[in-house]
Amino acid sequence: MKALLIHVGADQSKKYRMTLGVNGPIFDDGTFEFIPILEFYYDDTYFLRKEEHDIIVQNGEEQEGKLWTLETRTYSKIEARNKSFGKWLSDYLPQEYDYAVVHFDPDFERFTYGDGIGNSKARQISYLRGGDYIFFVASLAPYIKDAYFGRDMGLIRYNQKRRMAKYVIGYFKVQATYAAAKTPDDQTPLLCDPLGNGDSLNDKIDEDTLNRIRNNAHTKRDEDHYFIAVGYPSDSALLTRAVKLTQNGSPFRPSAVGKKVFGDVCYPRGVKWVYDPNRIQVMLDCCRSCL
Image (cartoon, rainbow, N blue to C red; front, side):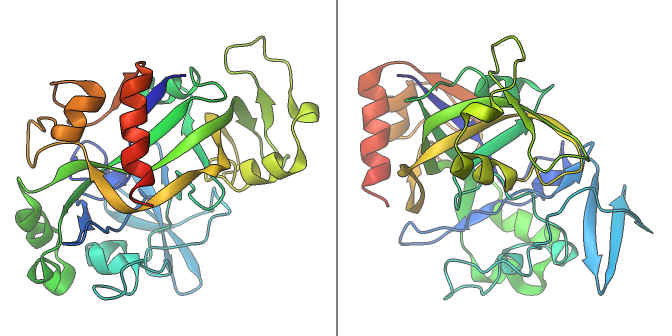
């Protein structure tokens, strides 16, 4: 058994527009909002839905275009979990993202997580096997009501600066992992052993698992090549309260829990592997106490 800690969701990174430029909020009682990234194409292009038209926004310029995904949910149509502070996920984001289509991954409804083949983070998924764990880490910042007045990007970022930390927000016990190839002609991707010879495993996978994979954000695209992990529904969850892994602000030194899990090292983003069963159990116990 081994465990992968992997950074997901919205954050203040300026490298990729798809991460939205702001962090998700965490509230005084430890509850939080998990805000997925934008549905994107080659990093700098994303979709807006305005009225009945599909609008592509590329480098800030709008144009009508063909949707490359079956996903229809936008931040202004996904309900927030903490209704005392906001009704929709868009209430915690700059106004420009109200009608942006969401890249809903990891999927905590069907317990799948994919990432496109070709980047180093995605390659880590291919090393997971049944019985391993994925712990999903997100950047969260304390909720400050005034920060969301007018939902201005600069104001939100200013109020989150040096206050955000890294938190575990959910986990999967891995059922299986696959290399997937989706084409426009097929609803179900070709699924193979990520470290195997490329032979199809589709006939050996039960229909429930195939259906969960069909609903993943990467499968909803016209075409994509990606690694995908499927979690056991009985031992996978989006947490109710987040588990704090680091101190607030860069360089993100480990919290008391973080030290027990991955040692006295910083965790700004990316991935970390944990191989010690005792350290993995610490993380599991913390997560299960926050369901």
